Image 1 (cartoon, protein in one colour):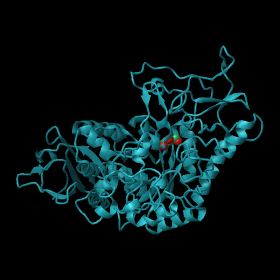
Image 2 (cartoon, protein in one colour; image 1 turned 30 degrees about the horizontal axis):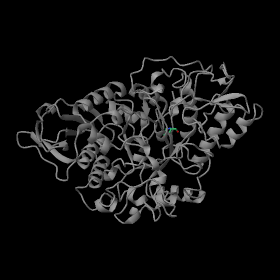
Image 3 (cartoon, protein in one colour; image 1 turned 30 degrees about the vertical axis):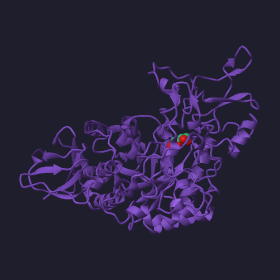
Image 4 (spheres, protein in one colour; image 1 turned 90 degrees about the vertical axis):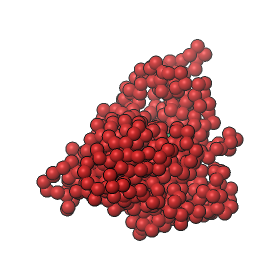
Length: 570
Ligand code: NOJ
């Protein structure tokens, strides 16, 4: 069993009484469990040199937006900041130990860490350790020859044979998630290399001890520079079956990708992966308060919960997939409770750099036009569920997906269209942050690398920062409320059977405090009888709206359309 950070911290109860006590005894009060993490896509946050691409000084300039006098989040996760030729916009890394000159200097990075820490913000780096760029020095050496120290740094295999015209055939049926075979022939070696993503992103060979040693040395290097933790890109595919057999083919539904029509038995979730991740964790855990969060690459909450035993956190994608429907959310919360129980700590995520922004996605799923109303209601749920909330820059002002014309598309897979399969253009959720209504929106003095949304003149931070009724106003209130209430930060969650079909209700409880959350998913007003939630008087403490409603004397709660009420027992 891996020792948990904070397991023996002062303040953990000696004789655990409740599931929450057990949880505290196990985890202590680490910031990553009680806190909130905010993801920044560095190219889209602030551009200080006018090249249209965000940079590290641009992030430093905006740290006050995030700290205690602003939003009040606890940690900042930076999407990759390393040198990259940009085929997967930063996720194709050519040097994992350095800062991309496009984004700034090494000194800029060290200053960012210092300035973030000064504001009480932790810094989480995105580690892309499953693959490198094909421009990485390791791969340059590895592809050149079957001899030498880097020859076995990648997944090289001989052809399985040759076709009628003498062309080499791939070693097995594995596929790239971005389309086509997962294998690319390299004439210099007379072998294929494997890539789950683009051909420019060759997969490293984690089964080579020298690779593991080099990766962990790189991890130590960043920790020595004061980094507080890591998000691990596609971590459950680090290891493949050593023999690399073909994956079983599945009966796929029409319209699914070829990748979806395989059972990924041999190219992900290998039985010895937990041992590898434990070796990584041992390094992170050398200093209390550091954390890691694994990006589950395909997999449900069961896999997320299982892997959470070896990690601080593992993303679970159910909320990202769920439409705006009380019925769906009720089912989702029940599954979460069954799978994670009171002991395993989940994440709460609505948006990230790979997904449609949730203001757009949830509104479209319910046919509701008022994206701000959905954003405020979704936020009230996000900050009151059990788990660590991960925010994605821009969601705090209700940013929607931006329509990018085909000729401007940057996201590489979006330019590749295969029969029966069209890749969603991720540029839509990566447009720059609009800080003001001025030209360039306080983001750049140049031409932004991705266009702004049509509403950036009015939807920007400056326009919302003093408006309590705005999405930003709601985020600030809800984050402050979460920080104030132990039951919201680390309490248990029990779903409540109250209200009609469009109502979701749950109770959070910890340290003798109870908080009841009642959400109306419909646009029409509704009345909810609170009696099934137990006796006593309920008082509003917050919610999606500026003025929370109070239940009347008979404890019947009147909710406006798309209103979430947060109540405490009086
Ligand atoms: C997962 C990242 O979230 C995604 O943006 C990227 O394209 C793939 N990993 C490949 O690195």
